[in-house]
Image 1 (cartoon, rainbow, N blue to C red):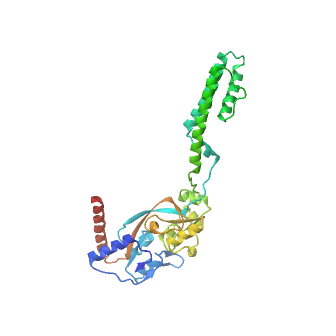
Image 2: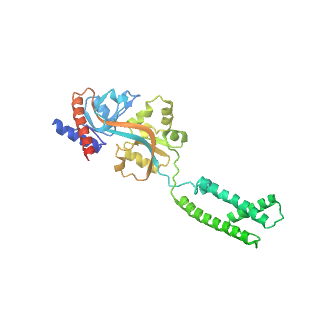
Image 3: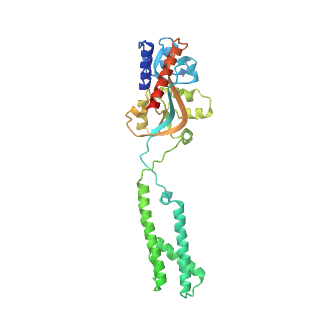
Length: 328
């Protein structure tokens, strides 16, 4: 029996096992789903149902290893371990907040700049006192601070002094501010024109807390059972966002097509095994880590007499493959 989704990794493993053990397989049926336990009808579906009913001996595809499946089928040694991700359509718009205008420089630069403004204010007070001004120091501080702030905001002086030392001080301040704003303008343009995608959430918990997205998985897979058959309160919250089982897509490709058409839809699946990299997804998607791991292996009928023999050959193949990688 062969599943409609075949991984090249498992095909290669199967060919090696057939050559080593000198036997072949007859394809007796093809099904679209991997299979899951239906608690309402008390039956298994998909490929697992074929093995459970005795109509087939082995399924030539990679199945997620779960406790429920271990009760009805035998698993070969797991050969693929992947991470599970949420995939959403990549946001095309990026948000520019008011705080973005201050992010061009780090805090130390801003602190240094305002420190220069205060120091320049005090310096001007000192120079004006030395040149015989009769104004109070408090008034000088306020006047000079407003003058420096006006220069900082690229405003001119109402009355430019004739005292040489003050002219040098003002000229130096003007020059410093020009250099500062030139650097700021260049950094701001670079920062605002860079693509900063704002994701609505960055974890499975954030997905549930957001509550504006719906969840989709491939029908008849362990991804659905992971939440549907769990009594965990968090899993129940996830199921509230899950599409109805009859509305779930059959394949990951169909699921990705739906994600591309619906910006408020997220796909829960693995990152490697389902050949995501080989699928021509019609849009750009963003993977969001969930913290879940998944182990995949081919399955045989329960208490199959060839399980140990196949696992022995499979272990040899894995060891040889790792040895080749080490030598390379």
